[in-house]
Length: 292
Image (cartoon, rainbow, N blue to C red; front, side, top):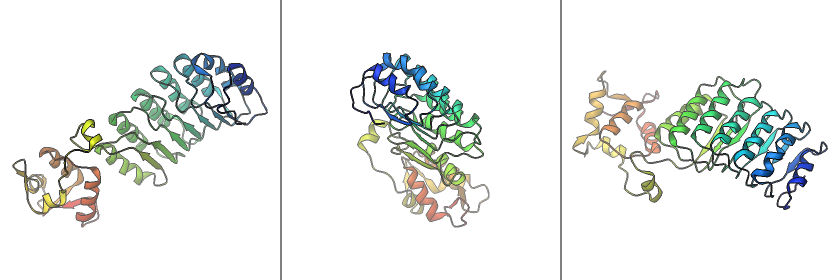
């Protein structure tokens, strides 16, 4: 039943949530608010027939958001839930993350633009890790447009690498930026779970501030030219630093050693430049770079 943009008041929403004949209910863009959500929590948790629920764009915040999260943990029937564009900052976000751990029946969870913070993202990662992946039905999690730090995203990616298997097919982090460390872990994830799609925001420039990234100021050195032409950068040559790291003296270094050398100069670069360099100079096809 689609009742979005219907300007419904609390009683109307409550009556629909208690209706055992409704399987799909869309209450997005109504007048629920935080106060109303506090009174809807029991209805959300007790409806044992509803499979899809959309409460997006309802100004649900604070205690109301916490109550809704509690209700979702109790619902054993719900398969898809959309809470996007409500306010789940602070404790509400932590409670919402517990839904990932405790409700093993959900397959699609949409939390776009919910003001989730780093602590909530960490809790979501831990929920995915500790939940038995044989039981969890989660296939899609949308946490796009939340103010996560790159450190928190990196930690989430690392947590996902610890999974032995998962049903998760799509993780959406649109408009959430990543840095080089995130990209490295993401490459590992892509190898381990080739059928998992992760969509993220822009790649931050290593060594730049977020303000610089927004205007894309500065030029980026060609790593290939810098290496091949032996150009001095900040009075040092990249090839000399790599040579010092090459203990086997075979003109090969690992990608980790290259990154360490770039940080020593230091050079601003994008992760995509590392990928291009690896594709060009990985003569042994084992993830090493020929710098000689």
